[in-house]
Image (cartoon, rainbow, N blue to C red; front, side, top):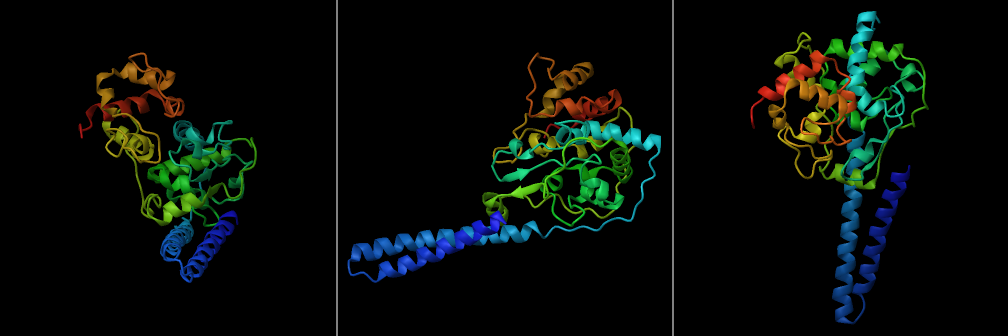
Length: 316
């Protein structure tokens, strides 16, 4: 509603400036006529462009859709345990700032540009997921669309959708098993402001990861290059460290991360210690913007797999 009012104000301002320019054009003083009318025309055009981009952003904001898979997760102890491993090492980075999966953290503070408010949902039964089907939760993780069909902006930007089908089901099983805690999630949890909508309309913001409708499988768990490659496919290291993990680039939404080729100079023990203590092998404190606390909750095999991938990936 707030954005609609803002859009109406932009449009009204553009019209008012255009009318004022028309009135100024009718005066006899040539300096006032050309200078004033020209300036007002430019301002009116700028307001009109901003209004048009904001309108386009609103249209894009409601254009994301994905099918709901027909699934019912059987919550076995093994599945719940696997889901807990994934949730601790992945979901917790955003959803466990106030308690285990209780949400409430505004992810906008991590962005380089103030484009709105994006509150991590409470994933316990105290949040909205208790009313969602397993298929609706699966769709939210895989494609960033909620039970009402609304675009979950941050979920569509992250790579959690690249989890295998079996691992998403494991996360669902674990989420269903946790006790209710924390505060309800704002409805809606995402609010993109006027700047964000205009940037979205101008193509300056991503419209989310591509919609995935096919089956995704994962490799066997183990301290291997292949399993490390899989983990880094769904973790969001590339959001900060660049698509090739060779360092972030100015202008990206996420914080700038360093070139991860630096890990090639670390031992496995040093890498695992860094992820669990926040201190790298050279004694430097790792930035709190790096979710090392959640990554460090992975077991030794998972961290060893990441290490295998990072120390054997191409240099560029």
